[in-house]
Image (tube, rainbow, N blue to C red):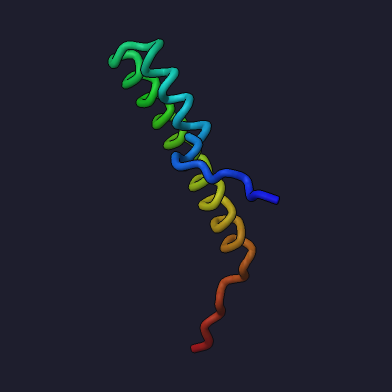
Length: 71
């Protein structure tokens, strides 16, 4: 029984294939605009996560009773 032949070149990833199709269909300016838009979406999502985390911390600290200091 023979082993399956080994491929000499790697199969491109899905992302690589999409970028290749994108390069064929879009001009450079459109690609740049689309990537900039996607970067903005990712940054908005990051800021939203940061806001949620900050809100959670503020709510937790508001629930902690203040320390009383004895004279």
